[in-house]
Length: 299
Ligand code: UTP
Image 1 (cartoon, helix red, strand yellow):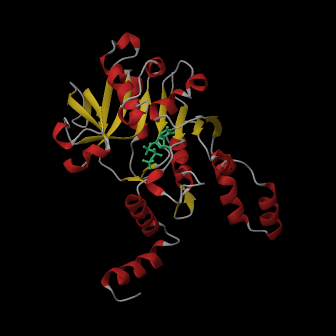
Image 2: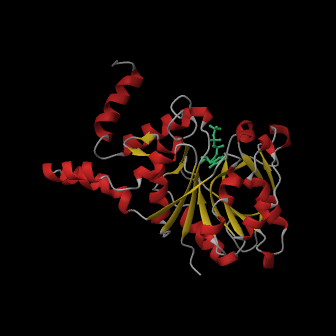
Image 3: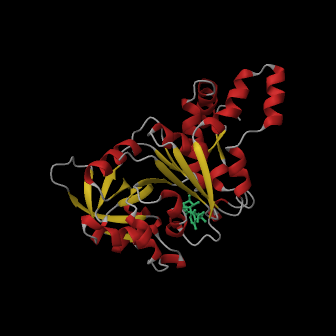
């Protein structure tokens, strides 16, 4: 069976980005001229997923509106004959079949994923964190989907980070997997935000997962962990030890491409600059200005 559902949790409080996130979900912050969430939905669609479920929280409206039609605006652009902007407005509406479900309270990423249980049913599915951008030139999700279809179980994405940063992430202990390349590994341990001296590696879990539906039952029985939240990492640690016939086993894919955590202010700024520099419409002028700015030859 081919995986075709994507779940995108976007119900976090976004406290690292206050006050911008006081009334706007961080997933709606623009990266150049598109909200972060649109890049994530585009990535899901590019990997062949046509059914997208957004898990929303307090400020659901702006997220839902973004994927909905806006007849008044479209009529104005149509009357002006502005086909280019009209296409931009319609792009997000026509991207995929987007559904919404609400996470009443932000009780953690694991709890957010659990809200997808009814929609997903009994099939493997992808989870893409709505504030985590993977550069579209770097392949990650499609190989993860292919790996889950080949090996079963669940697949998570890992990124090598400087050791002193590992306590901001979930961290994985890994071992080589026979017959696979060096960046495809068996997960042997998982711990959420460990102190640096207790971290089993410098491999951080990043926001792309392909999960076996057995994760739902595990999440239902996962007690709140770090920070009082129901942690997806804890559920994955349980899945890791389950037999394959019960949906167990977790494989890791080490990602070597470009990734931006748009929920972090510094990483957000880097994402905007890198994506803008590479844009054919804005890049040349922006780059010229940026070089002068960095050299101190312009204000
Ligand atoms: P983060 O830990 O980055 O989100 O969650 P946060 O809690 O909003 O961030 P800060 O630390 O307060 O700034 C990773 C992803 O999981 C979602 C977030 O929206 C984000 O996409 N999430 C997190 C939920 O959907 N629900 C939750 O209860 C927690």
